[in-house]
Amino acid sequence: MIYITRKEQFSASHLLANAELTAEENLELFGKCNNLHGHNYYLEVTVCGTPDTKSGYVMDLKYLKDIITEEIIGKVDHRFLNEIEMFRNVIPTTENMAMVFWKILSDRVQTGNAQLYSVKIYETEKNFVLYKGGL
Image 1 (tube, rainbow, N blue to C red):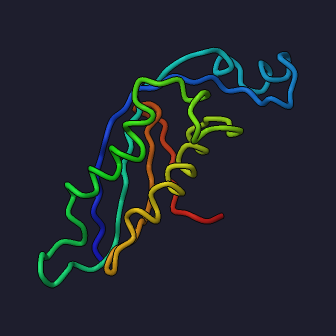
Image 2: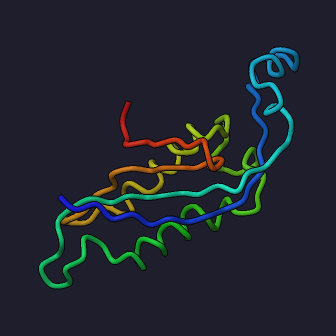
């Protein structure tokens, strides 16, 4: 099995709040993240598989880049995540972002010889989430 990864960057803002809680409960639960703020995120999408016999690629990284740009970056870059359709009724924590991105990407990157292995999102230089599908 070979693993290939494409890394992309996007900037977005969000605030963390649970609609079922009061303002006071949200402030207690999420602290300063309950206020509008933003991050310069890094997204790493890893695909695994066996190299194609004709090309030698697990997947053409240009093709993977195009999928990530179309399905994720083009929809989240310089946006307020709480207002984006993909996060309707979802608190846009980095954990939830990873699961939403997985769901969006998993079918798109599936080929005869490759599949999605992981979605990794860096919220800061020191904090990241790694999601490998399923629960």
